[in-house]
Image 1: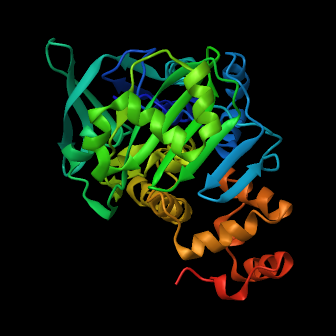
Image 2 (image 1 turned 135 degrees about the vertical axis):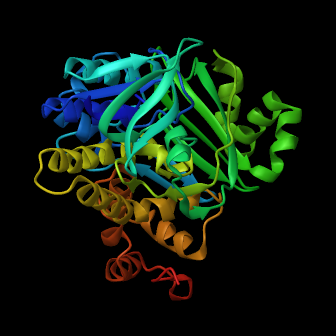
Length: 411
């Protein structure tokens, strides 16, 4: 009998299991994958996410794998250019984009070292209910016989297409249609800083360094252009660079060498699912999923797995009823993630609203506010502060932004 069974052992599940096991709870983690293994991902971890790894004693281990630091970021939205970096967060002055084969294996290993039991290659087929509450799981290794494990609580950390969410009937209560598709691969031969460039048409490319002296190179276009893109993937991929920044387009053509096959990301709609019920909860993309444009998936998985771990510990220790306290986790997550969700959904349209155009255009004219912009991106500056009407009014006055182009509120 386990205290908690966690289904899914990647960026949300393993940290949750690790944190609970460190508190003395008996935890089982299962995943249908075996590690190390890859998965579709932006790879990017913001400073706010790295801060969690640092607090857990994992960041140094990740850095020691040779993942390159990034300390200068380049953003553009058509003719608006923002370059720089955020102020340190908890002493962290860099960001990293590790390969998931490396990051996830570290997280799984840390869960094991902390005392959690981890079963790899195990596929869940059923969530067991007893007296109306989730009470365990059934599943199997490969084609083997079905096995059953019992627990006080079950958590689905199994991604946006969560099996657990389907088995417990967790409905989506907020949804925003996905706007774009993504293709990406890994290139050697590039000597580029982080690039996140959105151009007319609309379309976007992103490039950032990862392990093995390679860069993750990604492009985005609107979904309605997917068939056209697929007709000539190599040509369409190159075309986006040529149209947004011909200099970088020439460089990737001359010096870039694609090292792996292209990977396609055609995500489902952005959503929030009901993420707590009698004896169960959802964490990571299983409960809250958004477009990869802002790269917040890993960071949010780390952040809210910690929140859920605290609430589960409180309930398991008998301080308060466990379902009651876990319901608070969803309220915290929804409140704290709302700004990121809304910003991501808007920016992922690949065309700025008049409001965001005016804010980012004025921001690009002031070094101090540009640093705040990167603080917003990194998780160090709250959206309520960055977008506060009084702060924006002061910015517009400082940079002498035309009055007829100011939009002090989103409405």
